[in-house]
Length: 150
Image (tube, rainbow, N blue to C red):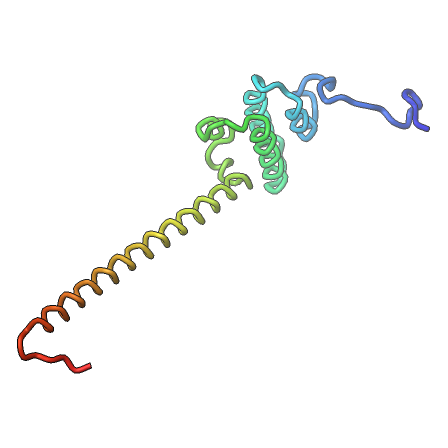
């Protein structure tokens, strides 16, 4: 059995880890989960800046930026685009998975709207053409002595 103080298992609470600046970037990022909502935006902005300064590889930076963005979106679901841009910078924001997913979703919705509008216009055009055809046939049928061959 593992008991407290046996040296085998030590329970660590994120909020007890101390100053974020002295923590490794990964741990500081995870600590954002327990940060209160008022401080979360400022901490996220600091973490984004640290991520860029750490000398990490591009994939590592992207993973951290995605993690920071995901934590923020769960913690602050009503955060707006302007605030996200201010924290990440537009080029970093565009690299995040969240941005890419939202972009794809918007493109799909636009494509669906365009398809519906095209279908509606085609139906209207066909309906108008049929009306014109019926008018012409009606005019021809009303001419005395003219019979249409079927």
